[in-house]
Amino acid sequence: MSVDAAKHGQMPKQIHLLYETILQDYRRIIGDEFDENFANVLEHLSTSFETTEEQIGAETNMPFKEIRRILYKLYDLRIATYRTIRDPHTGYFSFLWKLLPLKYSFATFKHKALLTIKKLEERIEYERNNTLYHCGMNRCPRLSFDQAVEAKFKCPMCTKPLQLVDNDKIVNSLRNKIRELEKDVENISKSLSENGFAIS
Ligand SMILES: [Zn+2]
Image 1 (cartoon, rainbow, N blue to C red):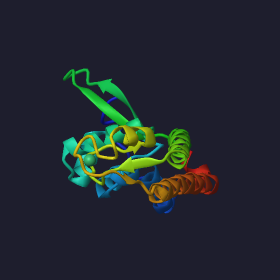
Image 2 (cartoon, protein in one colour; image 1 turned 30 degrees about the horizontal axis):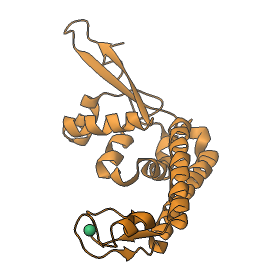
Image 3 (cartoon, rainbow, N blue to C red; image 1 turned 180 degrees about the horizontal axis):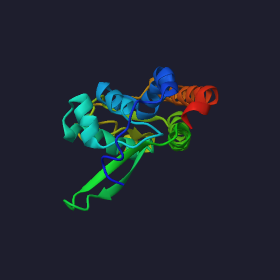
């Protein structure tokens, strides 16, 4: 198949109609890195046709380096996939990109989210079961009670006095992170069951 043959026509209408909802799901999966450029690239990908970096570049005016960076990030997150074809005349390879069905990206996201939640819960357990001491300097470590006794309640790094750490704040922020992740999983799952017919 040549690059020309891979050129696509219009984006299927159904995807356009659902685009805003789906974009929200991708934003959740991609996280903080998500920005206008991600939205632009995503808008030019589809589960039903393949496209090249060159086509995305021509349609968005984004630099290839940025397009490539985003495409590989989408590949890592199992949002998009590609195959390579070789032009028989020039010998050059082209990458043909396609969106994976959202359910695949979501499965990967959910798996990672559950692992993260487990780690955060372990962190909370640790914070709640340990009395920790700290000097207040960001670059210095927190010490256990035994370590603090050994250091005579002076920070071994900067020699400032060690204070008991009030870790309620840390526990709360960890709990918030867990809640956010759970909400993201729930929202994407809901969106999939509502719109899945059109995007899987
Ligand atoms: Zn210190």
